[in-house]
Length: 494
Image (cartoon, rainbow, N blue to C red; front, side):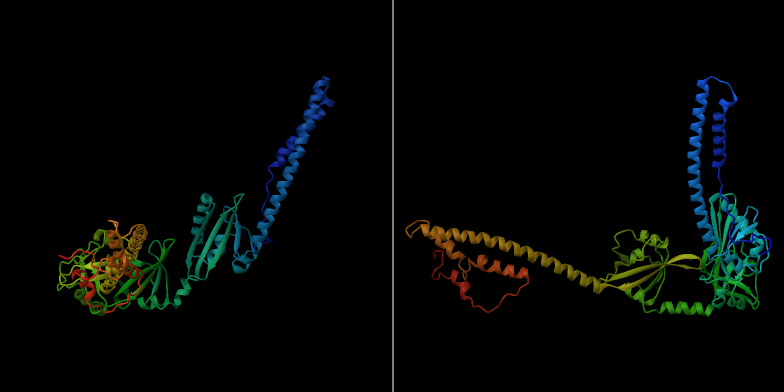
């Protein structure tokens, strides 16, 4: 590249502001030490000047040593920076404030070997259509922020241009090709018509599918679209060589004031078929306004909700059990604040109890925000959930009964043991002997009065543990004997 520095490494200067201070200090110290030889002053003045001169000389030597250490450190840093700049795989340039190139690395010489220019704007003219404006914008930002970067769409692809301000008023520029992004030439293979639009509405790029659809290469959106501004997510009319055409516009990758618009051709028959397919979908669907008004619903949704008419319906009238106002849920979903989490609601049907799992989704239709509700019958799931809750309650009651049975059985065991001890101390002639015998027989198994203590409590304990109890047929005699005045009955006969 003619006119540039022969070396590909920039000549980075090292500033030594210490040199001026050191020279002044040495000159002053030598002047003070030579003053006694030039003037005939008293001895005490001569000795004072000599002492001050020697002190300044020592200070100057110390400053010289520290400056040498700093210079060595700076030289090492410059060497590292120079090596990085020289071996960087990205094309890099060092320019002055006017854009004149002072140095460039080997990658820059290889990348722009056909550009014989002394300025960065002239070198990048093979890549950018108007490089002067881009360089001025980035350099102005770098003066205030220290660095700046911008991704630029070109016909060859995306180019990332970065600039860093250096000491001494120089600027370090890096020109990087972004090959991974699918735009520019890479979008030629995309079968969907796509155009790249700039800040001012200029059409920067059209892929082959877009040029085929339009029939020519247009330069601005006002010549392509019948009405402006372009509304994404809606059907717009474009001008083609064959006449007006309706397309669905989708916007992607909006960065740095540039956007990529994808154009999908539609017609009225397709729209009618979409409406028909929505009506006969095998899944209950409801279209809602953010206010809760039902715009439309298919046949499956009508059957599930138990309604016969689509007019004047609100979601809050058909469902309940959300736990918060229905309007808040719909508004948060329309604003994109709510998470995509399903809610289980109870349908307001007079004939039967039905639960539904409702999932809301925010979509754009005809330029306005609507909500799509997908319903799923959750009645069986709610029934199983209620049965599970009931079983949990019964299990808790069983555990409680088992604990009570254990405690009560422990009390009865203590009473029976003390009764046996009292029987050992009393004979049949004692007036309390009959009462003790009655307590003792109550504790014996097989008697009606003793069943709560010796039979029911162990059975409750087994039921709480989930163990099965042995079942066998019994006659009425054990139950009728206490009431028939049989032998051993503790109560007197009438």
